[in-house]
Image (tube, rainbow, N blue to C red):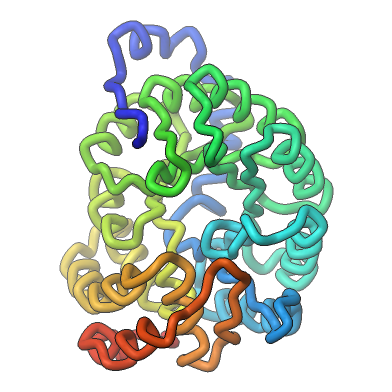
Length: 330
C-alpha cells in the first residue's frame, strides 16, 4: 500500500519567496534544463553476457546508437538497467564505462538509488567523482520511510557529491509515495534540480508544476503518460521505449515541446503498441527481449528476472508486436 499524495497547502506556497533559489542557482538550473533534463532521455538497459557479466562492448554500441539517434541523455543503472541486481562495484564500473565512452557527446545520468542512505551517498560520491552530468535517486524501497526520513535521505544524497540530483518517485515499485509538500520543499535545495515522476498522476503533476521552484524540471517516468505530462509543462521523459525506438521517441518529444501537436499525436499513436508490449511483464523483461529481437543486445537478465517460455510465445504472437514493428530500431 502506498502513502496517498497530499495537496500543496497554502503555507507551503506562501513560503516560496523565503527559499527562492539564488540568481546563480536559477541560472544553473535553466542551463541544466536546456542541456540535460529535457526531451527524450533513455533509461538504458544494462547489456549482459550469457554468464551475467556486464557487456561493456555492447554498452558502447548502445551509447553510440543514442548519440546518433539524437537522444537527449542516457540514464544508467536505473530500474530498467537492473540496478537492484548490480553490486556497488558494478555500479561504479558502469558509470565509468558510460562516461568514458560517451566522452561528452551525450549527458550521462547515474542511478544511485538504495534503501540505505549511506549506500546511496557512497554511490553519489563515486558518480560525481567520475564526472556524470547528474544523479538519479529513487525513494528507498522496501523499508518505506516516512516523509521526514525521505527528506533526510534526499538531502544527504544531494550533499554527498557535487552532481545535480533528480528525485525519482515510483511508488508502485518502492511502496512509498512522496508527498507534494515534500517535493516542493526539496525543489528549493540548490543541488536538487528535478523529479522523475513515474506515478502517471496528471492531476498531481499539474499541482507540482505550479508550485515547484523556478528551473526545477519534472519529467515523466511513464512512457504512456509522457505526452500528457509534456502538454502540461513537463520537460520530457526518461523512457524505456527509447531503448528500442530511440528516434521515434525523440521525435515525439521534440514535436510536443516545440508545439507541433499534430506531429506529436501521430508519433504517440505509432508508439502505443510498443507501450502495450512493454507493459506485458515486469520491466525490463519485455524491453530486453525486444532489444534481442532487434539485434541491439542480448536478452540476458539477472535472476530473479526471467523471460518465461509462455511469455515469450505471447509476445511473439501478439498483435502489439506486429503493430509496433515499424518503430522498432528507429
